[in-house]
Image (cartoon, rainbow, N blue to C red; front, side, top):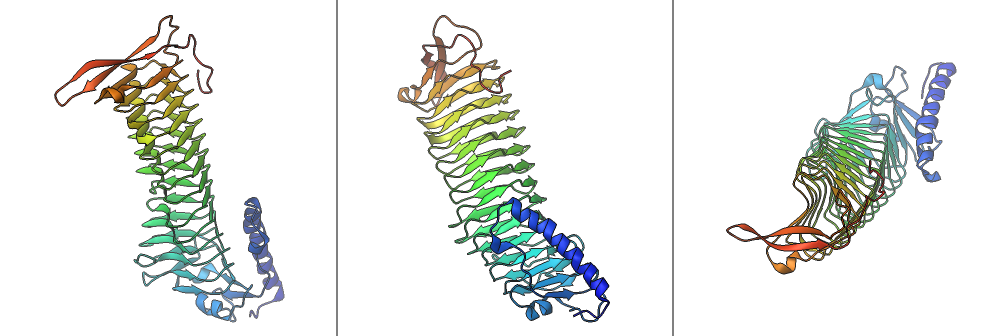
Length: 441
């Protein structure tokens, strides 16, 4: 298609292949992607630039491409005011993400991707139109790779996936979208990795869209993540300056090695059987970790510190477990359990909170083998509306000093008129010395 010297064409092609082979290929290998997503070696079609044989629009090049071809777009003719339809398995490569711009001009989806096995990289995708299924990049696609793109200033979703599975979203930047990524409707086994999200636009995953993996991503003022389906994994992600950092409405999801700071709520579990491990919640406002209305959620080996109000708040939950955690410097309670019961708090360091462990109208909880000490008010305390809701087990906790006698945990009955002393729980076998729990200084 080009009429300039073979030397220049060879140089350009060599640079492109080097970019593809190092940036895309190495990233794919790092994620252990299957061979079907390696860059296809078909014909190369060029858009923009200064050669007479190049296409002037991206859509014209796509229309003339065949399966396996690569459409390469030069940045010097940017922005491209187009609403693209990608309906064949091709590679769509921009010269440079910040300067190669596809602008939907708010006339609809900036890119509508309806083929499988497509690779898109090296663009800014912006100004997709408002609509429940519209936005920057709409995908009804499987086994595709979206990498090294900037998706910004779309009036609905930056990236929308429906009936799309086994796709890779790699090293992308999202900002100023209503939703950054919306995964909906029979979309499974998608991977989001090494992406940054800032200045608005949460990631939402819902309606029969299980088995999503989100890894090594940053969420700063973006609205965080909300997962309403099951069996997803979030690992090595950071949540900063959001309202809610990570929210799991669905069940049986796993969160590991993540951190949440300066959010209203760091981590939330609404669904059954979610598992948080090796996570850090620091300087959040309402709660570091919040579990609401579920059973069998686990918070394990986590650090929850410097929360303005409550470190770990379990509300209307049963059979939740808080274990091997460091819970310190909460403005109100280190651990607060309210209503329902049958939860376990064990082998934690609960220190320097206003109240160490606070139980409110809850029963049959097991508070065992913890270091509970240096609280400003009380290390252990409970409030209850009925005697049956005052029965909890406290056993073998260390209360800040060796004790020869059992430790009394005083409670108050709540009436409509007043609080007055009524019941006592007892730790019959308080530990004589602190437990050696990781994080204990």
